[in-house]
Length: 179
Image (cartoon, rainbow, N blue to C red; front, side, top):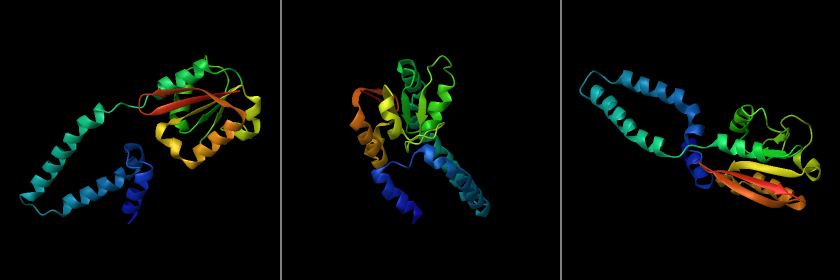
């Protein structure tokens, strides 16, 4: 039943991705080990694991051919073009923060998470939006359909105009709002 719910949810927002399914790996390995243990010594106890290895090996080329998310380039772009006092709303903050600390020459910016909550200060993004020269939204292309994303974009649209949009490998999009 939970798998069916995830499948239905995936029709609207993709959730069957390696990032989201990685948490299931220990349970899958334990179940596979238990299944292998329960196989009685026979022809199938060798054929089934060998078949699984062949099937999984066949999937590897497709995984490595797919373009990876270029968070380094997106972060470098924002940090090189941002001005002191700009706000950056990062819809998936972990990779942005990871690369942000690798560019120490970057100007000071205010960072926010996907709910518009400050990562370091106590002021929501809508409260001080008028005091920032620019607001940057960093996220995935497919998040544009997310209701929270749309509501924050609409709130920013009251004070700003979209000045520039840039796309990066892996479906990452950066939107710069300015007055």
